[in-house]
Length: 267
Image (cartoon, rainbow, N blue to C red; front, top):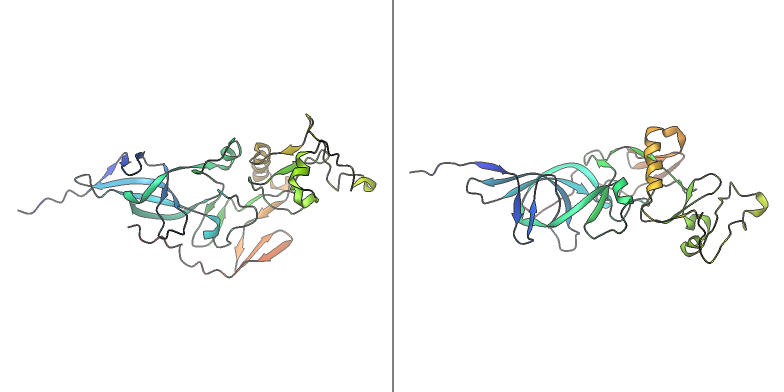
């Protein structure tokens, strides 16, 4: 007599034995890459399925892309732990999960006191077919007019309250850490533009030197998203192989991205 076809069933959770972790839909996980030279893939579990006997467990996932996997590649403002939530869905074996991780919102990430190996952050959704982002623009800072990279140290001008990279202001991070007050070149008197930034051995209580992953900058990003006229924005628009951030235009390296990044050997 033929065995009945029990079909597949959906699981509320599943314990991945080789890592000793229980996963559930909504969890973020690290997936085994196709090459040992490739970092673990980051994905969000959408659904867990098993056969009628509870075996052959597979997970439906939605992939996060790293900046270097996107059409434009990694840019100056991308954080080292930044990932994009893509529209790329897939089904993988549960035993290819290497561990659990956390993908924070940009705001939550800026509040972290320390960043662990399994911490990531996401501020963009990414269309893997068109290379477009949502949101398609973010606030920019400093005279370099770049979006905020939470890995970078920034200092705030006591005059205009804008934020600047120390290196863009011809100072080292160590010099920035010793600042008591800081005025950008626009806010400084003409005859003091080279000398008015006082440097002291220890920072005063009103210091404007801001550590990485600063919440104030995240708040400025939030305000800019709703009121774009309040400050310049970096427009994430792709047409042909050109990106633009307003007046400046840069040509990207040649990139053939007609297909989604390959994730082989996981099925």
